[in-house]
Image 1 (cartoon, rainbow, N blue to C red):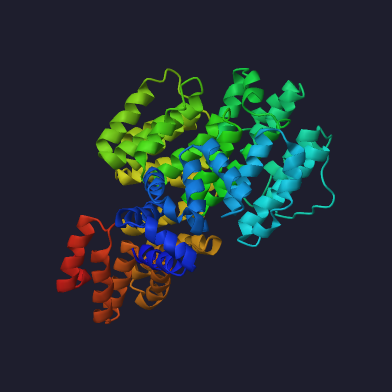
Image 2 (image 1 turned 120 degrees about the vertical axis):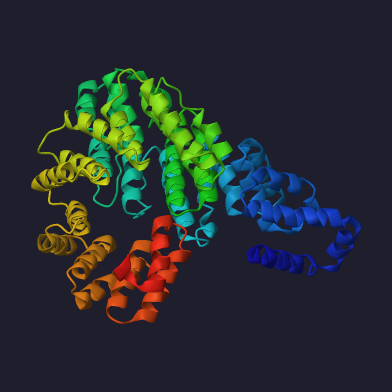
Length: 560
């Protein structure tokens, strides 16, 4: 509200400081209802309510000529509503009149040039947009990359003059540019794009395989596809493997071609949309995603990012509308659709309705893939249906290499379900077998903490926790180490670890509760009460813990 109020004040100052001629015109056109619509449109824009913004804009156009930012918002809102042709037409008018030009208006003109295959015009136009590079860093990266592509499409060569170095983004751009030219080193560039230690770029396996298929190298494409692990791969990579397995080779070129400039820039804008989404800027993410879809509507699978973005801002109606894109002819994305729909049901109704829906849909699948079985096992675990999870985790284990890291991970997951059910012998067996394959810090922590809670092998449990803490400086593990020392009555050492844990996770109820307990034991009762009372204010504190805290505030921790 404060931000909106400041905007209103700011724009009022703009309005009332115009020259005398404008002031006279303003007086003639001014009425209270239009001014109210103007301010309402600003608030609607901030709330991502684009239809309302457009409606208010139409009735407050008396300010259009005087407010560059307002017109820029209007263009963005049009794009977000899918009215890109209308936005482009408006951008053309702005360019002709040379009033209220902006980054957005000029970007839309560049996109129109590309759409019309006017690469010469686009080349010279893009190079004039350097003035907008100073507005923000990512905008500068976007424009520099578009310069590269404009040179590529006009001269049919990779520019030697433009020397952009934007890390992995540059590697990805170069791979697509090499692919466009049919360069012999394309495979090498795609390999470098996919294999990065700095993040998961498995999405680009699709484009690599797409390139191989376009070159008629089906066997090579199959070899790459065979290496995709469907239990851990990205959504697009898993669907790619499904297409290869079913020999649906034509679909690759149907939805994307690196020889098509619109497809290339569409994918570039998808990447930019992903970056903004990761940063939490949903509006900008959707803006570039809508442009991406405008350039290449064939690549409907990219709309999954729109689904996620609208889900993030709790616009479930729009999220569901884009889910309708995914049908059961593409089973991986169809299963994704069902899972996301279950998540929406959970938000809008309740957990039971959500689980009943997804489990019912799962049972309709005649031969579920290992990926789907893993998903249903994880979903059941999240809904605390541990018996069911154990059944499906056990099915997955039957088809895995017993020495693989994934086998160790599934053992850990199944063991945690046994532990929650009080089946401690089975839980310990799974954890210990998992640790034989991979001495993972989180498995060590889970098993050791379970032993501490059961007052079982305390000394060995603490050794395991200290080992886990050395391998991974994680706040949950630090809390477990501190709690281990607490249970062995080494309160001074316990306080060191628990204090560190509460500093790293100040809003975690368990950590605050533990720290309160050790402070009480050290005679620092006022401080203990402070941290216990904190626990009562946290939204994620369970009812049982709250009841225990209230008892501690009366009598201390010894009588719990």
